[in-house]
Image (cartoon, rainbow, N blue to C red):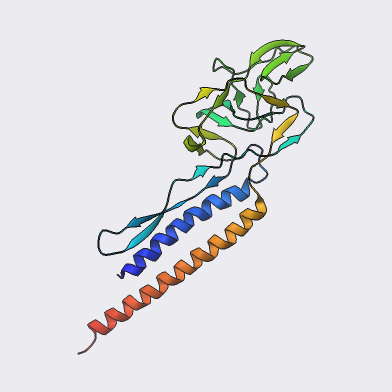
Amino acid sequence: MSDGLYVAMSGAVAQERALDVTANNVANANTAGFRAERVTFEEVLGGQGNLSFVTAEEATVDPTRGELHSTGNPLDVAVDGDGWFAMQTPQGVRYTRSGEFRLGPGGELIDARGNSVMDVGGNPLIVPADAKDVSIDNAGQILADGLPVGQMRLVQINEANLRNEGGNYYTARGAVNPVENAQVVSGHVEGANFDPVRGMVDLIRISRNHESLHQMMTTYREIDQRAVREIGGPK
């Protein structure tokens, strides 16, 4: 098998990874709190000769904040600056920038997936059942009829340590620290930080690159097969 086939194959695999990540970004362009992922490529030298191959490194989360959109819902909140909401899920703690919250049947403050918003003690935030007016102040404190009943857990995370878990949920590697003087904006949600038009352009570009590499692989295979026939043919 020719060296050129290996080189083209490594490029095709890297482009497939970029295609998957970009397609996921496009699919979540309207998902509140979604942070797009970016793929970078790295050149790897081969073990023999002067060959070099390309690999796609692990996708990283774009730290750019999405635009804030007004909803008028007092339980919708967006983080102004650093900070991630901590959510209690069946799979463990997950982090999100999406503050589309509502009250569950037991008074828990939950998101669209039905998972509970965590308080600073790591427990679900619960609002008294007899509360008539529920709101969230700019420090992330839950107020029931004007009285504080809980404080949102907002954490600071290095975006390089974030990994997407699907949609607007993320896991974190490394240290997770409380946000000092957190600021939230009530009645707003943060939109995705991804431009779908740019995403479609990227999808077309990556698809063409992927197609070109597959055509290159086909050409190298044909060359190998021709060489085998000629070498192994009658003398």
